[in-house]
Length: 246
Ligand code: MN
Image (tube, rainbow, N blue to C red):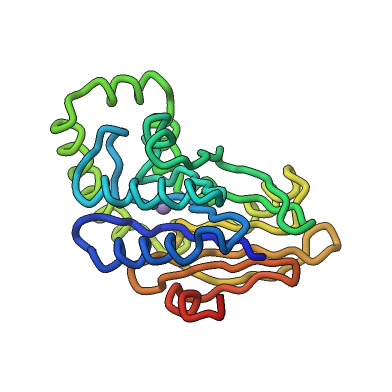
């Protein structure tokens, strides 16, 4: 069988075609793969588990149906949807993963991340991340009414679009030194992440052994899916995956 990885779908009501593609993928993959991993930024924005902005309810329902068919569904927080919590788990039947998370992939130890933690040259962002991931800040945010949280979410999206446009290219990419330090710390030679929207398979050497970093693409234009089995890993588009033999 196979295990599939996706990330950075950034689903919202603005791109109903991608919501439809995600539902098709879930329907096709249920019972046909060993597991589905979503490595962050499934949603364009998620302001709490009571966020019922369309098309969120139908997305959650499709995920619940998928996990209900017995296929493990793993979800990691991204920088857009880190407010997914126990309510989300209950509605979808998914398992929330910590970032980073080490797993076994057909006998190979693999480290899974969203990817933002590897962008260590973006110190402004990492400071912001530390602030908003702290429990007191999260509790304060989640105690606000839904309409306030939605307004804050819209503002944050607008601000991040402007901020990343001002930043140099290398700042918003991962730093190779951090990649290697993180991989060494977790004892892996395989790393899979998203976030940078630069899909690629990078092969390099780590401690005298071959190492690999696989970057998933987004679902704006790249529509990335990573398909893994005992033979290896293949990065493809979701339409290539859906056109596949099984
Ligand atoms: Mn991201």
